[in-house]
Image 1 (cartoon, rainbow, N blue to C red):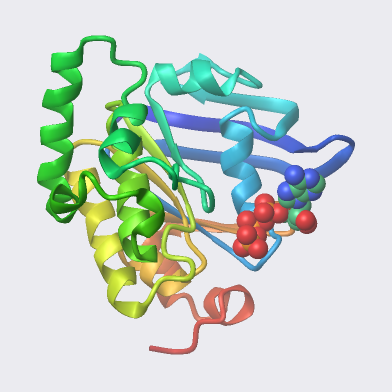
Image 2 (image 1 turned 90 degrees about the vertical axis):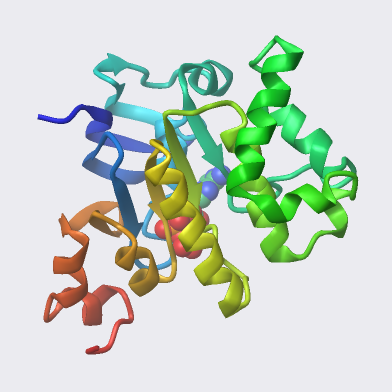
Length: 241
Ligand SMILES: Nc1ncnc2c1ncn2[C@@H]1O[C@H](COP(=O)(O)OP(=O)(O)OP(=O)(O)O)[C@@H](O)[C@H]1O
């Protein structure tokens, strides 16, 4: 059996006293892309945040490679190899592209190692190379999203959690970003993807979870969710293909 990189067991989580997730069982196998979809406010981002120790886990467990990381601090979680690309404020706009990438590698102490890593990451994101000295704030929305993913990759994560990476992007960039996510997975990184564009998100996913009001309404192979006669219509705004 492949290894479960992240697993949540009967996860109840929220903010303060407000419960948002009501008993989520979730897992991702090594090198899978798992896509989390569902209506607005269903708790998709909160699931990522609960895994990362940003939202509060009230009961249940979060495991990373079998180790209990429930309510662990975010900085410890990133050092363990869990990367996160938040939906907004995911780059430092007043720093250059290069500086952003260097910041992403803050856990790597050896400067030569950082340089080597930057070369590897720029191979996946060649378009960033010509912009290394440009301020991140001057990038287009799509370029900024690429930088946010590249920055997260700098720390050599074994799993990456991406929160709606295609939100507010033009159609051209939506496909580009999703293709990059596939490429990142093919380079050996496990992916948990929260995506508001259910069809496109599921098309690149191996398995999917449909969250509805903080519960798993459906889970299975991504293709099965796409082709399901009811689920797509009920919860995802999908019409028949
Ligand atoms: N920091 C917070 N404090 C209190 N409530 C929050 C916080 N963040 C989110 N919520 C609430 O938690 C619920 C779930 O939000 P969440 O962002 O997880 O949903 P989502 O499925 O990712 O939705 P969307 O697709 O709209 O981003 C919402 O009702 C939201 O208002």
